[in-house]
Image (cartoon, rainbow, N blue to C red; front, side):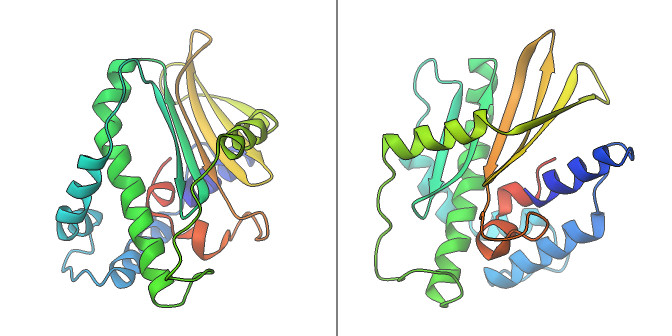
Length: 207
């Protein structure tokens, strides 16, 4: 999500699709420390390898349904994000990666909760999200401000921003190829969305 914000800001300032690479590496280092993953290369892949068994457990718990093209995920009882693809085959191929990225986010939140660095009671399970909460997230998404830019490849790139949401999409021939929306903490400035949102693994390393 942080990278989405930085690229959106760069586009608004007429500087094309750019982000701060140093900031990305700082977030990777932060993730290694948070999850106590030793690494000589400081690579994101080292975290995934170290947490492989836990991630496999998440993969076994979730399955894509027939005809499914998108997913709306809640982490710790709060909306983390939404991914939608135009093709069922594309969604099916990327579904395991999406599950792993959201699972990593969930593990990071749980670790911070255990250390008392995030809000809430570590002993209390978060309430299950309701259909109304999902609809509210989609309603906010529909109300987001939209900006359109010519893509570096085919099609058009869209950037979205609104209360509690940031996101991006790629469209070709008036058809959305991929849409990604991320929930953020409305109480924090958008440039520094706080511990829950700012360090989320999946959103921090998506463009």
